[in-house]
Length: 254
Ligand code: ZN
Ligand code: FE
Image (cartoon, rainbow, N blue to C red; front, side, top):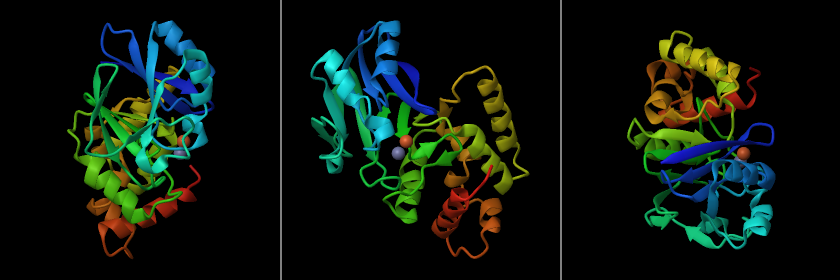
């Protein structure tokens, strides 16, 4: 499977996904139409559908422009996002896989950043929108800390460790500064930060990560780790440590 990250706006990623050798492609989270259309032309791909992880403008802003250029593409988003995703034609739900562009897609409902947030599992790649970032997680705009913790730990963290993670924003460097503050003795965090600095230095995206690397380095998947729990002594549970950590990240100046 081919995955092409498309940098959009200041730090967003849209993605093109296609079977090897195929010309039909999925577009995930088109922030803006121009960059995505240029990438499609450059890769020789024809879009057949748009998959949206959540309704925020920086993930759907390019839908209308792509429909103008390419005609009526199917637009997939969570059933509960109907009415707030432009031109949504398909209502996805967890437990109802679908096939598009010859690719089987599993939607995973991950409320927290928004209530209608979904991650899409396509082959061995998961597209996580603003739920799971490289070394971080999205802000809680609509969901509760418990919901986000369950979405991350109960769902995404349970995917096979080799699953490639493609997220919605390039926030890795800043996220790793927060991770290093929480786990200053972690060699995994140190190695990941070095790798990220390297990739950014070459102007490359830090995606994909893998679920295995995130389990080792992402503090928001590690609320149960002794080192993290020790940083939030007032928390009576992993979920409470997660909530305190998310609140600390909101005001972190890295
Ligand atoms: Zn968002
Ligand atoms: Fe976003």
